[in-house]
Image (cartoon, rainbow, N blue to C red; front, side):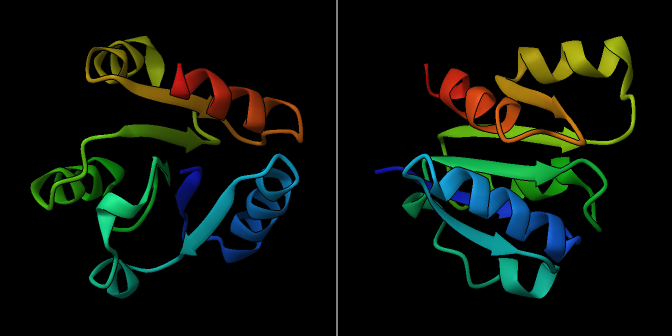
Length: 116
């Protein structure tokens, strides 16, 4: 199963990510608001990609997903420098980080690496 949940309040960027990843054979579902998160069946996805600045907080959404049984990979994307301490914390939690803007090469490459 190569189904990815892309969570970002910037719907246009979500569509770009979806287009890139679908060319590599991934199925991508985009969520751009907290109301939509309530309807997600988390265990359907192999990977969650979430914007660091998503309303309510990326880590809060990840915690919500974990409480609902999601136990697979998470990738955080951000246009902001989150700093070495925060990156180390993400690494320790098994969360991948990717800087925005990402490219048609860096996004699928990061997704592949997160699956290994």
